[in-house]
Image 1: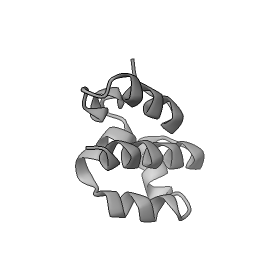
Image 2: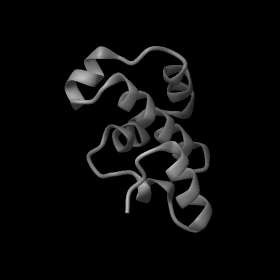
Image 3: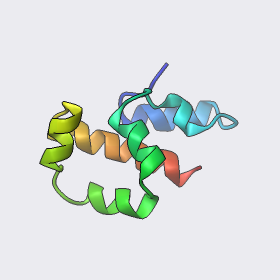
Length: 80
C-alpha cells in the first residue's frame, strides 16, 4: 500500500516505525524520485515556492500533486 498524501504517509510511518518511509512511496513516482535525489533542505525550500512547471510537465502531474509529492518526500527524509 502506498501513501497518496503526506497525512497518509505520516499515519503509515506511525503504524510501522521499523519500516523505511520510502516503502510507502509509490515506485517511479515524483515523491520517490525526490526522496532518492534531493535533500531535505532542497525539499523544504521547494515546498515554500510554486510548483516547477518543468517537473509537472515531465512527471505528468498538477501543481497540487507536485506540492503533495514534495511534502511526502520531505516527510520521509525527515525521519530517515
